Image (cartoon, rainbow, N blue to C red; front, side, top):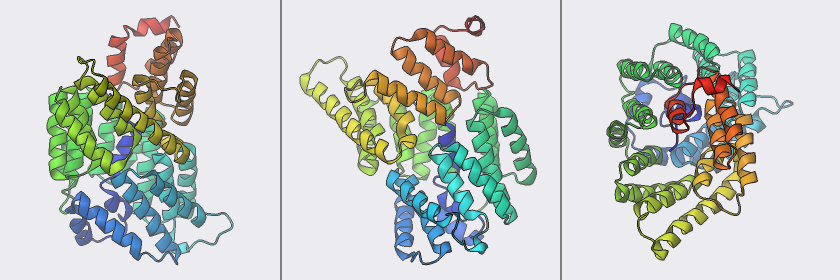
Length: 417
């Protein structure tokens, strides 16, 4: 089962809200309201149309194009669009290039968000420092603070994250700010408190931003999913899908929850649709796992062949993805590679991926993955050592407590290490 990551939470803040996040400082209230009620299909069509109309003959037009590529990537899970956006931003920010001064800090902030999304946190931090040096309007400063919070929390630096959170809430009390507060609480193991904070965030949704409700339900669903509260997770994911139908991110979590509840045929149908929309490796693996679970009692060669065909397709897609943006897909891949051994990903390659993922994302989530890989490969003592590092921090997401119980570990065991 996948667990809530800091990357996903950033995805929430500027995922479906891509238009609101990208144009926060420029759009009127009327424009924000019209964007709020676009369906997934309509929003994707709008982005496609705007990309076609961008001439890219000015720095501003190039920046808009980069933001649109990022927005489209979040709606389609296209790694190629992230690369296109990065290439545009890299070109805009070449050291010897004269950048349109009216853009202020915006190109740096957009690239910092992109670097954060693909787990290049040091580069994200550097761009945020450069953005501050450029100066800009107050809402630009707030956008920098939001991303600085995300970076701090993703490093499990709860002290710094709390300080930034205080600054955020002292200047603005909206959905994004309270959602981040809920995330901070959740990662510290304060699940009930974080759910209350999320509930409070609803009161800060303004007219024209009602689509945020879909994200509210989705975020609640994620919390319940990680707590293995399947029915509560299902209710929230269903509401999210009703509010914003057709979005792969909502659908895949709905499918995952249905699978946990044993409603495998429903999960299978949803995964088929998600695969058609995204062609992402992780969903081929999810389909294989669903079929494997569905027919686990039958030793039917045809079924086993079908499962293996999805695994093989997932491996092919994964190899392609790793060539494009390895840092963006390695964490998802490792979970699947533990379930489905494949000769193209021998133990030493999977272990190297886990080490690299931990290097890029030095936090509790990456340590859990690394610990899982070590344990899967029979390196129990090494696995315990890594897991004990988590227990010496404030990171207490539900997965930590669940694995303590599953692996029969305790804090006293770590004291002996």
